[in-house]
Amino acid sequence: MALTFTDMVTQARNNVSGVTSQEAREKINSNPNTLVIDVQDAADAGACGLIPSGVNISLGMLPIRADLGVPAELRDERLSDRSRPVLVTCGAGGQAALGAYALKLMGFTDVAYIDGGTAAWKQAGFDVEEA
Figure 1 (tube, one colour):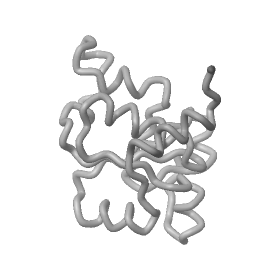
Figure 2 (cartoon, rainbow, N blue to C red; figure 1 turned 45 degrees about the horizontal axis):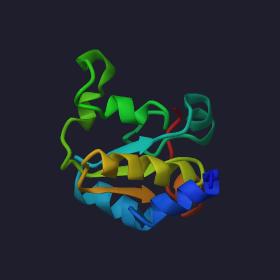
Figure 3 (cartoon, rainbow, N blue to C red; figure 1 turned 90 degrees about the vertical axis):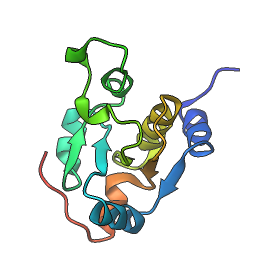
């Protein structure tokens, strides 16, 4: 049976941890090495804004940027350390769960998605930066 987007998100959420916006903020504040990745397409991330210190790497490019086996010019060096804490976000959380799960499958040991995405972050009263 073919999976829907919702099925894939459910599978991802069953296999990788989600954190609240408050928990994400505490993790970022307690460990400045935490990498926040917004996996929305650039135009969408720009419309929502980025979590401070966050970077935009689209969901489609994330596995390539994190792959240590591709040529160096295709990789993102910020993703070379599999033990680096990574929080993944998007607009509402679905794509974030998929991104976090992809990173977990690629060997990242400290990865989670922000439940509710950047929308939940903003609803909690936390600032965003223009992308």
